[in-house]
Length: 612
Ligand code: ASP
Image 1 (cartoon, rainbow, N blue to C red):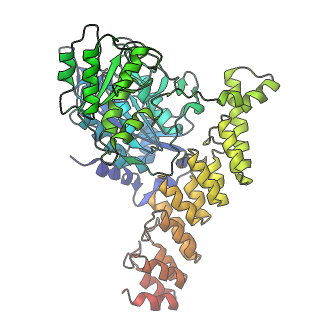
Image 2 (cartoon, rainbow, N blue to C red):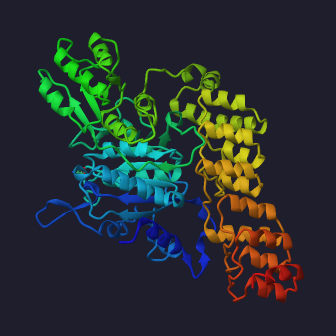
Image 3 (spheres, protein in one colour):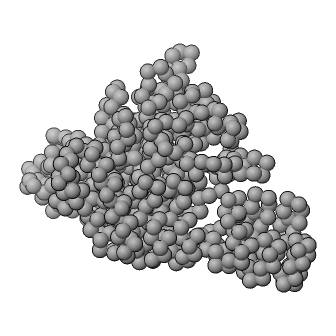
């Protein structure tokens, strides 16, 4: 079987017809690209001759192509040809066309059979295709979906794009199914919204993945996020609560941590539990245990025997995390028994769900260069929004928009949100232009989403990258600004930095995971123009951003061909010194040397002789 990367490459190439990239046709920057990893589960199952639900390989995509609301065949075939990706029809909610590709896992898996290896595979597949897509969907069985979502949230470090895990209670191809809405809405959200988190979408709610639990076996409302509000609700409109979005605030590139510690377990206390059972449970090689205690973190205070077992385990270096058996709420040291646990070396997991706690242990314990103290500390630190450790945010008190709203006598939540989306981008942009870091910070504290887009889809980071102030760019990145947002013209902050030749800014954007997003032939066109006009600085900008100096434009010419035609010696020297290939022939079979001869570009000709 081909690797994911090969498939993605194939898919990208299939977008180029007769050497002409159709991406440059009008409006194509308004496409959002989503990769769907179809791992199995009820969502894709079909009834066999005995009416039992089973996954059938190689059927899912074929069937999707037949559903007009999942695939706009006319547009897709005209744009990409018959074997191209799937495309959603345009709808009111998706301002961008959703173009999606599906990778089907083999074998398709009932999620109750999943292991940590499957989580690692999903994480690696996302990494391989990360630069080619705006968002990712994992189609998954519901039974262990929350474990997968929680594990992915930790493994996908410094995530800058959205990952949605979804599935359904009834197969998508059955007449009355929740699968169609779960999948369709996930696609629209993944292509259109900047939410750099691993989420779960189910029954109209987008939830933070590591906050979810499966709460119902036979209801469409199968998942809940008991300790944290939904990130978005998909009713007639999709309403995102941007204040809740957890954005990585480090200058750090997306990375997949692809190992997990398997010596972890879940132990639920029950009245009369024996110390023998606990002793057996904590035997080597166990390294981490999630202990589900009663209520707010209680254990029987009269059971010295079990406390001794906990203490013995923690003294051997086992990390024990205390979480509640209740569906919602947090453990605390309110009652005496919870204090006993702390004395025995058990650490509080606050309001972590059991799934989030177990997968966090597996992640933290696999960090080879962390000391045991660092591992324990990170269990209690909020790594991906998975826990609330008691500090109450004071955002509400400072809410600027609410103050303006009250003077305008606005009260409905919807109007309030609209007001915020008008006021904040303007104020953020003004602060950027004034180079006012303090103002930016105070706007963030007042509830501004630092990545909020204005009417042209531009964010404060777009403006800062155009202006070229490194300090402001750094501040925005540390406040969690997304490097991936494309404005209405398909431009990212990196495009701004390149086209204004801000080299240091390009470097820092790359450190945060930014990458060139346009198709190679379009980048080729821009670099050929730079070469023709003698702009070494612009070529250097592209080089720093990771472009290939031997890239070709639509007619197969490289920047060196243009340097030859226009006799731009400094450009030719720069390109050749940096490894550009001088022997590429264009569509008329000419090398740069041939063109230099034809155009009598003597300076470049002389220089090229050495490379002939
Ligand atoms: N057993 C199935 C699974 O988890 C249930 C489902 O998909 O809802 O794969």
